[in-house]
Length: 428
Image (cartoon, rainbow, N blue to C red; front, side):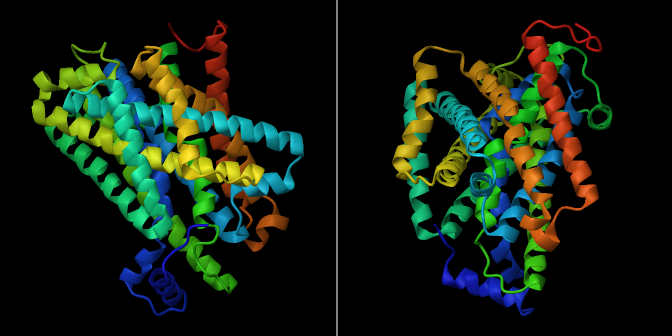
């Protein structure tokens, strides 16, 4: 297992002993930053553009709700790893019936492939548009760059965390610039954040896609693995300190991811909603942005998309490796794992499938797969024999259960629409 350097471990030990300053406390940062990349992947770009272009600021509340659910479940995933020393996949393998474990693994692998589809396509689309390259060439470049970054994992967690953190900074700064450039209607945006509404069935489809793109199955698995042996904890008091640092990092990292997603919708709403509501593809959004907001806005948009595709592809591979190792006790070479999960993306492009449609569809697949890790996580953090004194309290269980019900309910409605069953409270 990849480890931290002696210097980082020494800083963490000093903080736990009550001797560390704020700089040493930064040694605990990293897991939530890596997990937060899953909440800013190219799938978010596709669903957020559709939300903003088609419905203006109306669906911002979905982004906010999804982000709050994500915060809660990522915090619980980190707690599971810190308290038990095992990740979610390992605990599932050791405590659940074997047939159920196999089903969970199969669903998780499908989700990992859907994740890679979104990440590869996003990075490739960005490179293709920015540099005028064929889409296949963009995908090949994305594959090479992500593998090169994954090699840094051999040097320990810290170099990987710093690289991912730098890419997250690029995405965040890009959307800060976009919000400054775009003429946002702040009053309408505030109402969209605070007023739940689903105007029609298409809005529901996009809302489910937003949930699938925001609360990610592989991120829930990954976070527990990133924290399971990060700090050398010797007492319950130290464990509580680590949990407190983890919760703070989750709130900060996921708040940044949430603001990026909100900014995406606001940019699409301000640029496309009046006069260009039919914009539903990343390529169209790029070409439309140039005359509307200028070449700089369009270039910034693609730069953030490339950073998103590369960083999320790296994180997706790390999660896929952890899922396979946890469920099956099988560890494959990182290049083989990278090859297996990216093949569907190349197949989709080779068949000529519309790239943005494939991105949105992948997010719906992820949303349907999401209840598996959500319910498993809720089950384990509620078991006192596993969590001991750190078992989730009644309020946390109610909130997490409510979040799971929201996701399951949206998925049920989505399936009803897909099979042609009417949903009475939706218009259109």
